[in-house]
Image 1 (tube, one colour):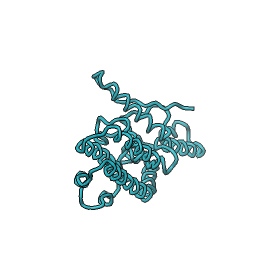
Image 2 (tube, rainbow, N blue to C red):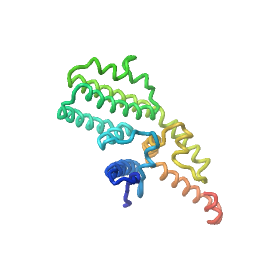
Image 3 (tube, rainbow, N blue to C red):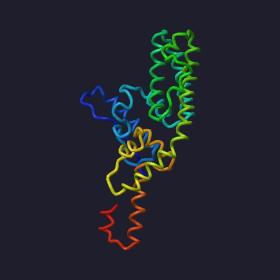
Image 4 (tube, one colour):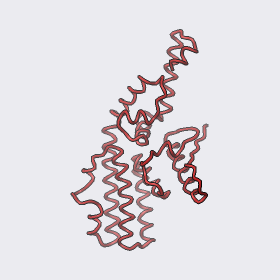
Amino acid sequence: EGVSVGSGRTYSNIADASKSYREAQSACRYGLYLEEEGWTKYEDIVQSGDLPDGLTEWEELFVFYIRTCDTKGVQQQLERFKLSLNAKKLEKRLLELEILKLVYLGWEAAKEAGVDMSRIMLDDQLPHVQLRHLHTLDEYVNWFCSHIERIMQFMIETRQRMKHTAVDKALSYMAANYNKDISLKEVAEYVGMNATYFSLLFKETKGLSYIKYLTRMRMEQAKTLLQDGLLINDVSERV
């Protein structure tokens, strides 16, 4: 069987070694999910501006589960979050900041999935305004869990509604351009999606990662051309 390896970005300061290690873990996590053998780079799965720098391992895993619509994984992270808050005993302001950071990470995942953000809000108040009306830790936790569950609900609904249309459009583009050097980012932009989210959606819909599907498409076309009598050199130029 093949091996999946993840790598983080290279930093000049040795103090950033732990950051590179966490990025490598994140890259490996996505590589395994996409069943990519070989080397998965952090830069390939996280675009510039995709997520803020400095996320903890827990936060990256939280975003990963939301992006992949893994309800069980999100619930596990929420339970860990509850235990963490009980142990930290944060003052009100710090508690709100920690919750808001996670809420906005969830929003970013929802926006890249094409969710209508107006549907996520129960009223016209932004999260930081809603949090001002809460007092106890239980109220904060219940509000946060309810908000994340609502994000997941609309993520799953939007994913089901959009995935076939987006992937069908991508497949048409790939069929017309398979003989060119078409990247995942190029195809994602063609269908109007974030590259990371598109790669997850493609894998869920077709059962293969983008690169594996493209490779199979090229191999099938090469087989057809060889059966039609073309020489190997001619086939290699066309595929």
